[in-house]
Every structure is written in C-alpha cells, then in structure tokens.
Length: 198
Ligand code: VGL
Ligand code: ZN
Image 1 (cartoon, helix red, strand yellow):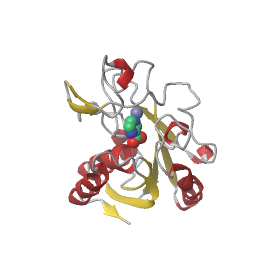
Image 2: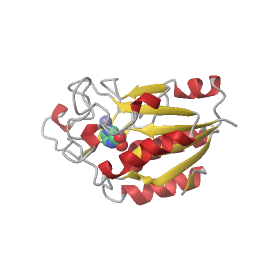
Image 3: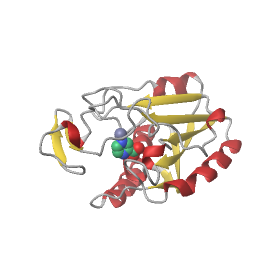
Image 4: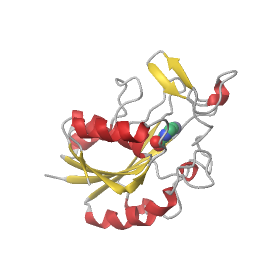
C-alpha cells in the first residue's frame, strides 16, 4: 500500500481577495503544508485556464457569474474569470509548501471543456493522465485536501474512488463554495462513492 496526498487547487484566486474567493480558504493552507510531512508522495493540482475559457461568464453574452448553461457535455456553472494561465491568481498560495510536490497536474486548459476533477475533464471521459501516473508509481491510497470541497475536491474524490483508489477526505482541510446546496450534494455523492470522510 502506498499512500499519496492529493492537494486540490490551493491557488490565490480561490483565497480571500481572489477572483473566485472561497470563504476561509487561507485558514487551511498551513495545515495542508504541515500534513505533507506524513506522506511519502505529494501531488498538487492547479486550475489553469486560457483567457476566454468557456467556463467564464464573460465568454457568454448576457450571462452572469453563477448562471448555469448547457454545454455539449452537460450542465455547467459559469464562473468569474479565475486562474488564468500565468497570472498571479493562478499561482499557488504563498504558504503552500510546493517544494514537496512530486507532480503538479494542471487542468482546465482545454478552452471548450471545464475540468473540476484531477482525473477527467467535465465530459467525464477526457483523462488528465493522473490515473496512469498513480498506477505506474504503485499508489493505491489517496488523501484529499484543498479547494473547493463541493467542486474540484468532490469531483476528484468521486472519480478516484470509482477508479479503485482507497480515498480519504480530510474535511477540516477543505473549504466549500456552497452554491445552491452544492456542499450537501457533494458530501452525499462522496459518501455513496465510498469516500471516507473525516
Ligand atoms: C473550482 C470552480 C471553477 C475548484 C475550479 O477548484 O473547485 N471551482 N474552477
Ligand atoms: Zn476553474
């Protein structure tokens, strides 16, 4: 059994003062960096959108942030512009110990498809390559922490469990957006997928 820590999207734009601020996000950063010492492998994800990305409300005439639209792959929330490639908002929070990362996996770079999960884009079929990386390294168990509990963390946890990894979510080291009950739904989805929630 080899156990890795998967740190989801601890980036400036999801922290207070960021473009898509998640309440209390800065409170979990020191705890996540400290937790890295307990793992042989640490993997980070980084939301990484080109300018004009299809998940941005500004890319759709007449739409506002948090509106829903129908994309070819299903319903999609529209977001404020965030985590634009190379921007300060896309950079990791200064308190995150990025030195410990074996791998940084970027996602959301396809202009036409959003990617919440660290494993698949939102079409649920285009792979990011993380599954193959973990299997090649013999990693069987994952602990997840980061942002946001009800979007990128939950999608990653559910996909990881479905792919056969043993998945633990440290809820105290996550923070949620909680849009129209999305947190309660995400917790239920993770429970039914077999994710162990602490
Ligand atoms: C996220 C919305 C848009 C996340 C990323 O990291 O949870 N949420 N892009
Ligand atoms: Zn995003």
